[in-house]
Each structure stands twice: as C-alpha cells, then as structure tokens.
Image 1 (spheres, helix red, strand yellow):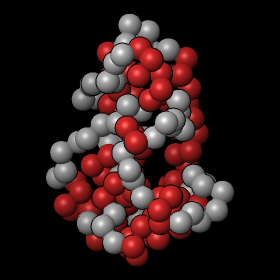
Image 2: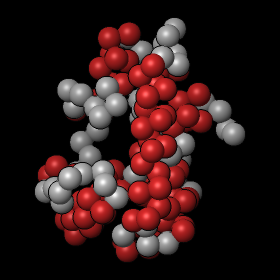
Image 3: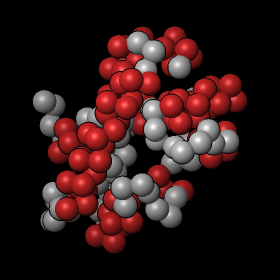
Length: 142
C-alpha cells in the first residue's frame, strides 16, 4: 500500500496501542487510514493478503474499535468481557485454548501477508501490527 509505505517513518515512532488479541492498532492500516482512498487501498490489500474473500467497502474496512463490535475474529473480546478483564493476560485462565488458537491462526496467515506486501519494510511494519500477538499479550519485550 503506497500510502502506508509513505508513512513508515512516522509509524515506526508510534506508541503501541494493543488490542485484546495483541494487535498493535497504532500501526494497523485500518486504524491509521485517514482518507477514502487509503481505506480503499487497505480493503484491496486485505483481499490480496487473503484476510477477506472480496474487496469490502470502505465502511466495512474502516476501524470502529474493538469495543464497538459484538464479536471479533478470534472471539477473544467476548471472552475477555465474560471474564471481566481488559486484556487476556489479566485472566486467570491465560493462556487458554482460545489464546493459543489466536497465535496459531495468526502465524498461519503471516506468509500470505508477506507475499502481498510491496516492500520488506511494509511487511516488517505489518508484522508489528499483526504478528507480535504473543509478545504483546504476554507483555514482554522480547
């Protein structure tokens, strides 16, 4: 995504914003897209990376935040709510089967993402956004 690559320097300095599933929203294209064109390019990328079965509308790809959704693709948000925690690592059952499944499903999509990226730098930033879940959920730096 040309617009995303053009912002890599600024994105690298962004303070992390972790979602329940361990994604870093601060560098997620859906979260940082500012224009209709950026949202459209993001939707096209999501399809190319295999994250959607079609190019979805800007309204569908636009991030509205985890709290605005009744569910999530990993089913961690409703689970966290059910257990009264803001983050999975706060749960007495951490690392449950749902969390381990999230790690496995995320890892399985990583190569598709790499193939869809235009540059190694873009892939590196998308790894920060989506493929450091385990580190982010555990609250470790390495």
